[in-house]
Image (cartoon, rainbow, N blue to C red; front, side, top):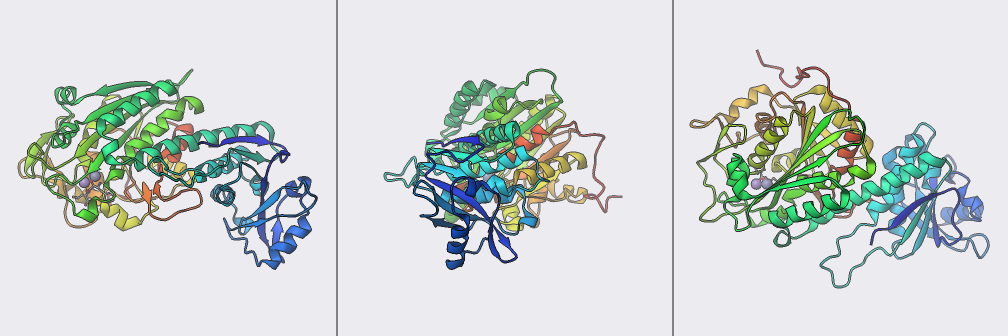
Amino acid sequence: MPITITAANAVPDDAEVVGVPVAEGSNGPEVVGGGAAAAGVDVDALIARLVAESFDPKVGATALVAGLGDDDAPSVIAVGMGDTSALTLDVLRRASAAVVRAAWKRTSVATLVLDAAPAELHRGSAAQAVAEGAALAAYRFTRFKSDPDACTIEAVTVVGKGGKPVAAGVERGATIAGGVALARDLVNTPPGHLSPVAFADIAVETAGAAGIEVEVIDEKQAAKMGLGGIAGVGQGSDNPPRLVKLTYTPEGKARGHVALVGKGITFDSGGLSLKTGEGMMTMKTDMSGAAAVLATMSILPALAPKVAVTAFLCLAENMPSGSAIRPGDVLKIRNGTTVEVLNTDAEGRLVLADGLSLAAEEGVDAIVDLATLTGACLVALGPTIAGLMGNHDGWVDAVGEAAGRAGETVWHLPLPGDYRKMLDSDIADLKNIGGKHAGALPAGLFLQEFVGDVPWVHLDIAGPASVEEDQPHVPKGGTGFGVRTLIEALAGFAKPKGRGQTARQEPTRA
Ligand code: BES
Ligand code: MN
Ligand code: ZN
């Protein structure tokens, strides 16, 4: 049940609990702002209780304190804000999430976390982060639980002065969290319940509800259109592949046109180059890129950025069978490039190659693709950081900065021209695997072959698409990583300038 999040100037009378920000002061914990006192909380008594309990106000720490002030005073959830001189949007997001976690089985919660936002932070963005944190924390995937431990909170009130920007920020945060929840649901859904066809059906339904255009290409049309990557990867499964195209057109004049491309392998067994049992255990999440792209598209009409967006979901199931592609087979991608498939487990780049070719054909100003592309990226950057690669410095920087504002961590990796020869094939234009080392880079270089000279960024989300450890605003499982970054990048979109080819990633090219 999604919670309702609203903005208000004061703590509502019916709030059962109120989240109160507590910072590390020079003489111990300090309540930040006047909201708690205004709500009838005896702040001196609260501090005394926190000191008695040795409460350490590090970011996201919580303590429930009842019986402060008069009988009507709400219970307090003190939430640590850390050192307030280092207070960022992400601290607000995490602290707000921690309040919701601590109030899990309540009904009505007010949060004063916005009081801790420093004046340098944009008030609307701060309110957005607080709303996002609260809504993201309340998410759980309960579809298959007989006795789910779901959050019972129905209403969260974000309390703070700031008028319209705060109200708009709260609404924006709630909308974005709704998108992230859709992506998480898709990622968490078992692969037997989410075939490419089922995913495409959800895309059609979602697009209809959101008011965006949608077109579904089936396996026969895909073959006719020359989508050899999608058709090839999908041919080994009883569940046929799909390509979904979604289009968002803003009202008024657009600042440009962006294409989003998502890897949507609904299950990756590896194909005939079969994975190990352990290697397959998380491979229902191999459609996380497509999930993030669909989720982003679903909230664009509500957020109304002034940019046209065309999205391609490359949906297939990678299975071993008598009809599966074999190591040694050659596929022809949409743009005419032939690829020798030496490892059927490097399937993501094959389906994305078709999606990227179609994106480039649209004549867009910039492309972003999202993909759980390589185990090597997970090895390199770990479970919470995405690899960021691209062919244009300005666009790479823009997407990297958008991720920073969104509180999603990305790290720029190179696409060294020197490594392109790893992909040379004896019999076709390219092969689909590089050498032994740095596997995320040849994968990125492979994708680069299909974008022409359009500014393009590739996010390898193999790590952060799903996590095994809870964070305050990210319960374990599918994370919806990428939705917030894409929304930020689209909201602030400006056409990337110049050719933008990076010197820094081709250091040794003559
Ligand atoms: N979906 C996997 C990548 C992956 C692995 C994502 C682990 C998340 C966690 C991808 O299709 C794959 O299998 N890649 C191969 C490429 C190799 C055969 C060149 C890999 O990373 O091992
Ligand atoms: Mn694979
Ligand atoms: Zn895969």
